[in-house]
Image 1 (cartoon, rainbow, N blue to C red):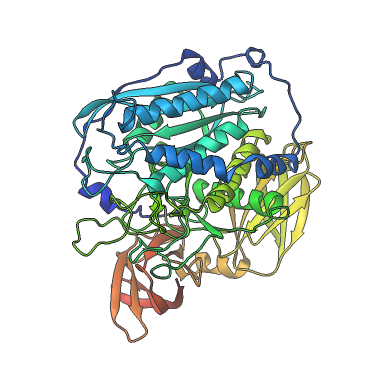
Image 2: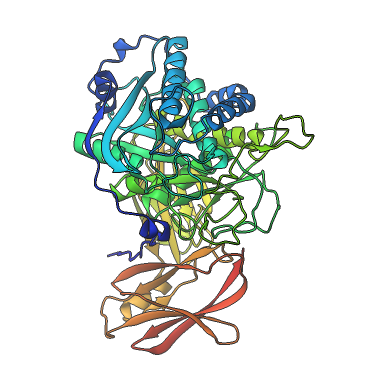
Length: 576
């Protein structure tokens, strides 16, 4: 029996924020949008021409239609509302959160009209005392699916609220460009481009509020979905997704140093051990990019599956969905301009400050000519998002998988569903080592030797589109099984290794525990103890996340302690 022990990160930014009361009176302004999200509608209500989309036609459409210039225009408009704090003005037509959300809603309505009214704009209303204001709204755009037999939805989100140094300062200049006009602009552009698509499952685009005060807009929708019984297959949160310049500080995993540039990488953060459903969805997003987008993209991107749920001490709107049991990931730029620690007098970076602006007027003509967001980079991230969402919304239902070790380096799989299938196999990394195509319900796959394999499968429909992957099955080789038979634990290689700012340390425990306490001791090569992590060892696989901090390199030792005595050690390599 496999059991997983994973200690959740404690987000320091949430601990330091004031506690606001729970949201109440959560409702959708559009009964039609709600019916669509529940799946209680007829596709005939939305009679746009149905176009069969192959897996290779979706990427081409996204690459051709997603516009960096469009997202630049949205970003400039969002910055022009002066302050989008959750407690800012709701009556003005020019400034504040009210003007911003009305403008976003109007854009959704216009794109709906341009696409035959297939798109349903709506507000998610909720009451909550935040920064002196009690009534708040997320903005939704609901794209109905063509198959009501599957009531599940895919959610793409970004938060529109901004802040400067004061959490509830509603008068300061808070353009919030990187954080998070970039994520709002990306989500809006996907609404424009995807509005005319006919996808099997419903896609919901959401622009949230009150992220900066504690993820309250996302929490309100997660509560609403759970109360209504809305089935969410996957959540794609976009936050700090357009900047490419590294600040003097950055929340680990941070960038390489002040003013370093990275416009070719996007990070996917998600909760849990490597075999959590959140990491599984991150692997799906990366696979769809590698196989569908990268071969035809003029500029190639690196999609990095990160070990932790978010940067150290930070959080985002994917977290409430994970807490409600939905698979959720966060898309974030490779580089961030600051760790948001605005309480320090020495803090000079842009994030969470009035400096998070459009850019710099270099020639003094009162026109911004050097933007802090790279809109071509933002467009590449939009394509990755849109492709993943379209595939997740178009593929078949995930199959049922069983797998056994047939012999050394051989895995026999049996899959229930319509062939063909994709079979993903991992050993020690966050990502799949290989993804195999299996053309029948039973097959044997030859593999290089490893102590453990993690196996999952996806179905492929007639259009060449894959389903989300099934949950992983853990297979243990005979040599590793002796650990169970001998009732001795085994400290496994950490994953990944070398790794970024964090790594998963795993201990495979036997079926009979003879010790009272277990711990993992992390020390440097000189023997200095850096941290001791308590771990409860249950039969099977036990995992714990270790974070080293910002911009650290070198070799560390990890020692498994049983009742305070060293039992087994391994080296871990940092390459941040």
